[in-house]
Image (cartoon, rainbow, N blue to C red; front, top):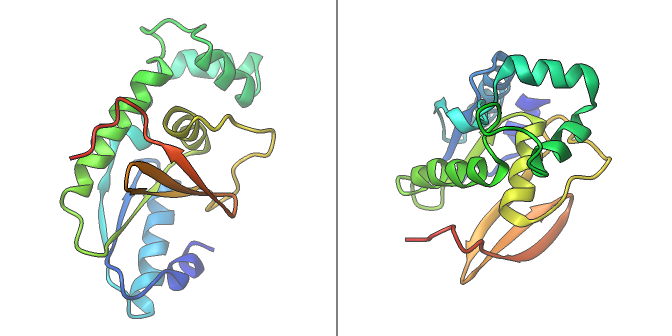
Length: 176
């Protein structure tokens, strides 16, 4: 599926792939890369990005919570601030740090380029909520699911679940 996805991406845009260090994310990135390259597109496997893998969580703590709650309940408990910052970085802090790192890479993007970030469903839910104010739903993120966004004038144009949405830019998200 990832290779097929890569084959369907635009060939006239240079594509950079960033990914979590988790093996399944690296494998997905490699297959998207192969799909792009096999059909004459230009792609670069960039690097592992920390915010795509680590969200400031103590893994032992997370595993214990996962025994007691389903992932959506864990997410809501995190958002509500029920977890100590020593055990799990608050959502707002994680989202702002992730934006700084991810947007820092945009400064070097080739003209007309496209950056793709491969990560985990919990990260996608956190970023959609923390960046765009879109709360998670009971419908889980599908494989190769996600969102796309661009800054247009003084707002964000977001593609989410086949819908284009105009959203205000969070006050803390500075654009250069």
